[in-house]
Amino acid sequence: QVQLVESGGGLVQPGGSLRLSCAPSGRIFRINTMGWYRQAPGKERELVAAIISDGSTNFGDSVKGRFTISRDNAKNTVYLQMNSLKPEDTAVYYCYVDASFRPRYWGQGTQVTVSS
Image (tube, rainbow, N blue to C red; front, side, top):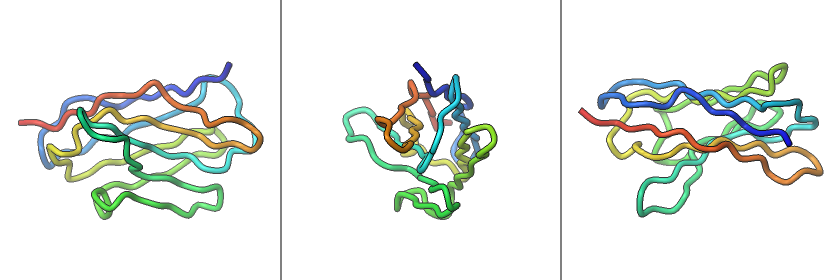
């Protein structure tokens, strides 16, 4: 069973940056969309960013202009560069992968805490 492994979370001060990475433990074929959701305590899970196989991207309104998403198709890896972080960005971040004819893959989640 292929799993998604996330890394890069942690504690950062407001205004700082973090880079999250997400890679599968094995090969996933026919990947379409890769992306990130987040969930803060007491809130619903929300889409942060997604990148489709053609390179087009989609961002949640709260992160537009601050976050970027990229992918390395050779490594099946997706990255989330988070800049100008705010306390309200504090959440558990989950990566996901959509591949043809397969249920969505989810990562285990990585904590991002923005605090002084």
